[in-house]
Image (cartoon, rainbow, N blue to C red; front, side, top):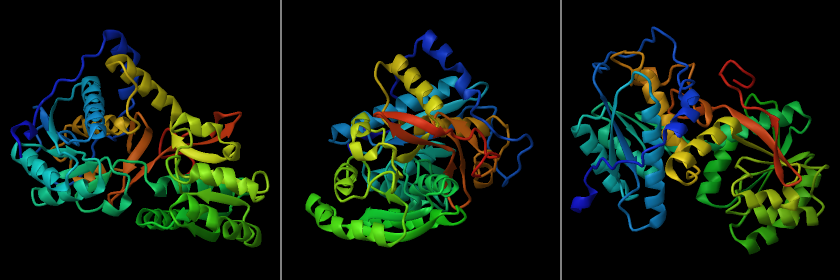
Length: 396
């Protein structure tokens, strides 16, 4: 390990007073924590700054990792600055995007006195970091969206396929489009997503009437189209759920399936990824009137405006997860409980509110997030059903 890979406290750009005032109301929503919360015994001293380690993919040769690391740190520091009456000693550790380095940095953070770890981003890193500090009883709130890594002392903060699929299935069932054909890719990632979708189906009122897959290449999609179209017509499906995102097969499927007479309104197109990212996806003809979930757009817009004003550029799409993590940690520390960061405390049922909306950690390390349900009309996002603002609302 080079000397420049040691833990560092790099100062984020200082926010303007106007930016701080514009966002002052958001973190006030960050805690849905009930008074008198109980949990495992602990010895956290909330009267002193609590050590929080932020593991980011900085220090690697990839420019994208550097940008992501900076954005995550900026968002975390923004959240720390918004906490009221809570002291956090935030320390930054660069993982280079490497699981071995992530494990080393996690152990270093534990040695430095961290009470909890926020990050890292990718599944393998999160697994390595969690294993490295499990014996020390330190929980890891990863930015990953892979539910397969959740468990023991590792929690996932990202929007998981389970959450997205459940939201879409419930809405489809309530609106007469609950006979679903799922279309996904023949890759290891695709198989994991398929497993998530099948888990999410229970209790939604929807049914999966057919499943079709394609080889993950443009020619593979073209070759699979006749079989996909035949299955849609013969299975009794009235909706088609795509697992792909805009960087994958979604644009090709959205263009070619209508050419094979599989299109709206006979078939309702649905997705589990955010079809508004990137914005050019909204221009796809086949996705008009399609349904997809997304985090609370009002809170997300507030965060993006605040971040842009503070740092001079728009945030990375997952930067808000760092804010959410600090919001949850700060809310728990604010209770003054010595076991505020224990598993029992992290999984308390009322959850938290961050810049992506309401969320809560489940006992198995996964999460639930309150999502809006949107469609595309005239190349623009239209909210069909708003995101719930608490876990007492519809769908929870």
